[in-house]
Amino acid sequence: MAIEREAVIAALKSVTDPDSGKDIVSAGVVRALHVDGDAVRFVVEVAEDRAEAYGPVRQAAEDAVKALGVTSVSAVMTAHSAPKPPPDLKGGAKSKPAGPEKIPGVDRIIAIASGKGGVGKSTVSANLACALAAEGRKVGLLDADVFGPSQPRMLGVSGRPASPDGKTILPMRNFGVTMMSIGLMVNEGQAVVWRGPMLMGALQQMLMQVQWGALDVLLVDLPPGTGDVQMTLAQKAHVDGAIVVSTPQDVALLDARKGIDMFNQMNVPIVGLIENMSTHICSNCGHEEHIFGHGGVSAESAKLGIPLLAEIPLHIDIRTSSDDGTPIVVSKPDSPQAGAFRDLARTLVAAERA
Ligand code: ADP
Image 1 (cartoon, helix red, strand yellow):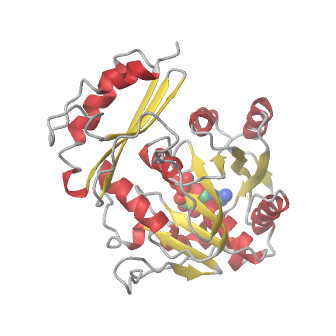
Image 2 (cartoon, helix red, strand yellow):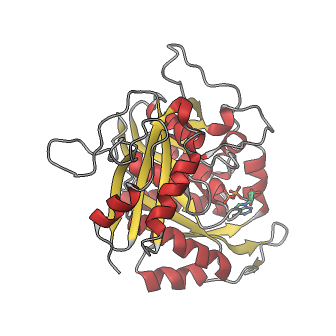
């Protein structure tokens, strides 16, 4: 059932803005409204110091739209420090929509996603970044996995990023990769319990306030699943493509499919799928075994008409290298395991994706 944009606006108008007493549409709190068939998404934009107070408002707005019978509603909250811009729901030619922006100096953004945690998304991101650097690409890696930032450990980076001017942040660099992670902004071992608006603010800051410099490609290591970070990234930055990492297990594939649907809805092209932990190679005898089954991702990618970009083996050296802070592409560049990542990098460069 297709929902009328006017009906959505009317539903949103039933929610009162606590600060102005007006409805949230007239108050300019609702931004970037997209109505796509029966899927609705919008941003609730509030001043930085009011973010917490507006949590229930965001929820009420989402509930009001849900009550129209739409199948999918996504209301993302962002906090800003600048004065509130006027409402922008008409999409008229004169008003500039709060749409995705290019990051200065960054040619392309590729998001690395997974349907669930633990499938090796961060391992793939770290190794792919190093492999692209080895191919001579200027590569950045933004660790946006706010719930479990692991890039500082995997890339052997520690310390606080400097901010000499108090406005912009200098990224860190290792193995030819320019990187920034939410993990560098909190104390090590401290659980990152971000609330929605803080999380959005942190992501925006890492995208726009980090001095990324000139990059051919910025890889973004996303949190698992389909949540606010994914939505915010696609709304705030121009994302050129997404790579979905999955293991061969069915359950992971089902989750991966949700991720693919989400990117389709956000008009982010899927570059391809990666099957990780595809084949187990014994470190003693080199014997190959399909512990988690094999070929599931390949079958799925054929069905969906999406390229299968790589099949990465399950090998202990991949894990120990990551744990030691030197990805296998750097620690054992000539091993077959590193070769899988290097081939992936070459495939992306050849396809002009990175
Ligand atoms: P995610 O980012 O999806 O949560 P990680 O990249 O953190 O997953 O990987 C989860 C664990 O699996 C880590 O300990 C990592 O070292 C290990 N791992 C990931 N891919 C492989 C692989 N191909 N072979 C061996 N271990 C792997």
